[in-house]
Length: 195
Image 1 (spheres, rainbow, N blue to C red):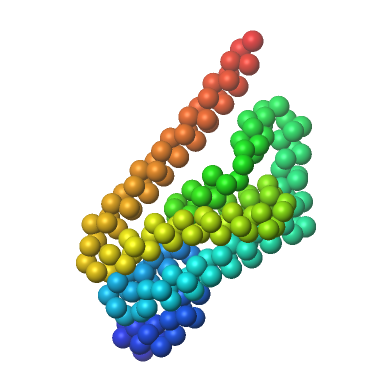
Image 2 (spheres, rainbow, N blue to C red):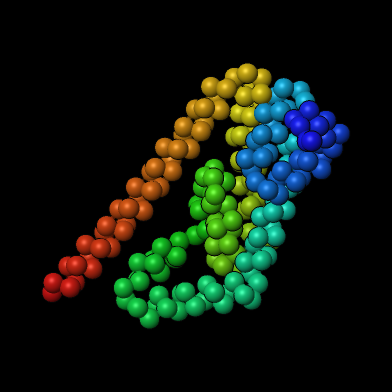
């Protein structure tokens, strides 16, 4: 039977591999390893360096998959349908913005990372430009969250609680903005119907 002691022993034995794999699976797993590094179980710098490599690797693979022919056709059909229907004009306006802000936000909002990267793959055709921007955004996440995770591992869990609270407030803000746009769209649609 597999238990927690065996898991911790495997973490200590292979910190580089575990950090890369954690980065590939998501920033939350890297944050967990940073908390463990605060307790001294695993090296902080190995988690930061190799977790960073894993996150960038994941984002690069998703970007390249998004640039594939299959995803290109999927996004092209969606945009073509939206252009044909005046009802979906607001979708086109939302899509005219840049991809940097959605990508930056996705680093801090759980569950949005893949979608933001796929969106960026359709907006940014130059791979090197995307890659350099993504390196900076992932670095920003690590600069903010690495100390938070390490301090949480040292017993200062209030910092982690505050950061998670800020994330929740931000998610509520984004949801309210989306609701505003939807209500605005519905009101405009009914006003056009009445005329």
